[in-house]
Image (cartoon, rainbow, N blue to C red):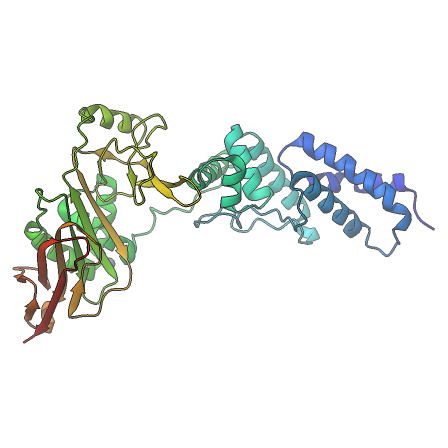
Length: 414
Ligand SMILES: [Zn+2]
């Protein structure tokens, strides 16, 4: 004998609403959808067979109703606040999946989900929308970008902002990054700028803390201090760059300088004041620089030096074949283009170094060779820079090269 449908509604209305609510961004939508679920359940109740699977049956109807209504696509939707975050540091490392059945945690889980949903509801429209697409609908970044008609970079930065805000609103502590000393890998990215004295005071302190506890990185840093005065950009060239490798290390530094100086930008103090007022963020209405692929809508309005800090970029689609990168943040603007990059990657085999940067201008290659290997003898290139202190000798090749030329450095040991 089947139980009356009203009895089932009464018993299950509460959790079913929460279930639907966990998959929708606002209360009104959830209420409408819950009504819809009960209507469908009522229509299907005749065919339902009592086998102790009532909740499962209702949940399946609810799940289908929600995804048909909201996304119009037949995929499984899982409520998860950590799955969609690309970089580490998710809002909640272990927010329980709503499909998981653990009766002991049910109350706690519901409360947590309700709190997060309320916090998402309270966000400004743009962020609420991003969070809904990313976490409630579990859509990939590209898809969210397409639906909202904004660049993928904006989706990521909005997600980051929204999570930080929810974290703050709910008092969820952030994993304290400052509590740990910087890793070697991370420190190496900054050693060049550290040796040049160009880091911000905060970053400088972090690197210094690492150096105090890491003799290996300290060696590299000391050697860089010796080398840097020997590295010279040739300003008469349209572009000049250098590439610097440490033997046995997977870190390289390269720098690019250019004498392109946009004549229409003359008030650098004004630009820097705007940047300072915006915490280094470049307002939408302000100047941007396109690097990488240069789309026709990119205006080269300002030139930047990044002082070894991370600058923000977002990729903007120009059309289906081209895209460009727009700079979104930068600590300071200088009247000429001089930028340093550090990156990790596969190095060329020891004993030979090439520039494959296609530089039409002045190119210099430096390789740091540990002194313990003996004195290097350069077969092709300019020579050896012997450091007075520090643990490395530098071999280098420096000359003007055309776009289709390659600058090669070869050396061996005596
Ligand atoms: Zn280290």
